[in-house]
Length: 484
Image (cartoon, helix red, strand yellow):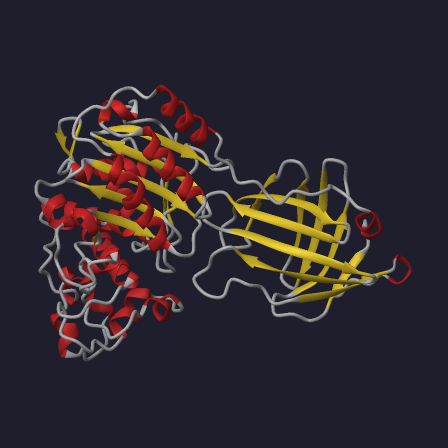
């Protein structure tokens, strides 16, 4: 099952890491909301690990663009097996989806250009492509303005084309192809990968794994592809994929301006990394023999990464350090006590009692919500929401959130924790946390007489995260009418 331990554990001092430096790092990451998990590996041993409840070692977490490093790994296996080369022309593999008369730059585009984000597009075509039913076809229809290999533009749909190529030459989706080659040797179990409308793993995003899965991948690359004495990655691929392949900028103070490899970023202090939106990191420091992994829900990733340099690097030593029992105890307690709680308040209020079981009828809105009913209970509430497409009924926990399944964020249902509390006599806060992703939805209902105003949104988002302001009227039982 997911969450099985594969890396040895060690006291930080034995691996030359100051536990108080680790404590400062954890404190800083927690202050940069919101941290879901952290794992630090030195000399192949875990010296610090923690999960903020409700996140846990055995829970998968959506990795977003950190998925790209796994796709790169799949390409490496396919190269080693003679199924393709990085210098193959893209159209030699997916030409059936190309325009009738491909432009010269598209004809010259190679798999290497997909790997290094130098496809030649003037801007990122990902969102335009993802709005279609065939992402590869949409990618190939985009104008290729620059000579491929000469112009860096971050391009997630380009990574999807790599996934499509690997699937075509192997006859297997990435998840299945990587199974016996990567996942099984490294003990990765239960990983999941979202797919495109045409049944191809997203590639550039969409993979979910555990914190230790990510740490193990980082350690594998740090060890040049060797695991338990076995050459798991094709010899030389780790060095090739993580080396500087293209320059993307020239700012020495920005980690995103240190160049790019094959679906790995180059970083400061000789580092390289896979990273995903909202703080999903696998940072590898070869010179220091360190791997740092975080899963998070942060909107500004630059500052989070800077904390690693600020707090961890000064705490590293070339040899073992004297035992620091008190520092280690403080670190252990801090990591064990990590948790993210919903807002605190009262399970009920006079206003809640007055609304109990009554219908809230909403003014027309772009969310398609028509009516809602809140039924107040001792241990949890029952919320019924009448949407133009379906009626949703959820249990809303008081002291403890209630685990349920929801399709609020995407088509496939996923686990969510739902809680509600009265933070003031007239203010009800509903929290919906997606426990395998960075996302949490907060909706605040403010009651004024017979009118209820609802505001809220996602904590992080690729676009606007706030929902439109909703206004509802409380309908008396004598004239209660459900719209629909």
